Length: 153
Image (tube, rainbow, N blue to C red):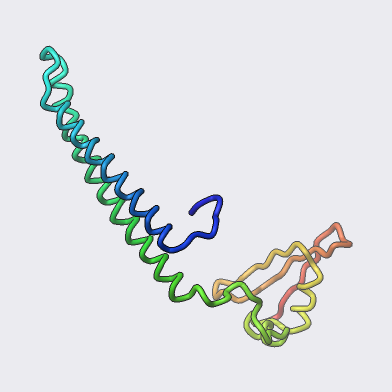
């Protein structure tokens, strides 16, 4: 993602993408050619064993690079697919029609306890082994000591 975004046409973005891809391909070609030249060249007989030992590592790094490129392409395709499919949906809106009774029913507590939970800023909710709410420790703004609300089941 670009840090500064300006409005550009699709043709301009495609041209930038193709130019960047071409530059990376040229870089990879020149890099691979340079490693090949270094592996075949003998510098007074001293550097050849060192470069011959380096060549398998370069092949391994190129294999890693190929895997990274494949994963990047897959994730990028997935992101573009999700943007096309779900991009028009507004996901960051509050749920409409959510009443305290509905919320209390989903948590398994009473609507009065939901109202009590709205009074505190700091909450510590304890659950049973089954995942039900067992106890709620809360501290309203005015109090320094925490109160405990014991839920009866």
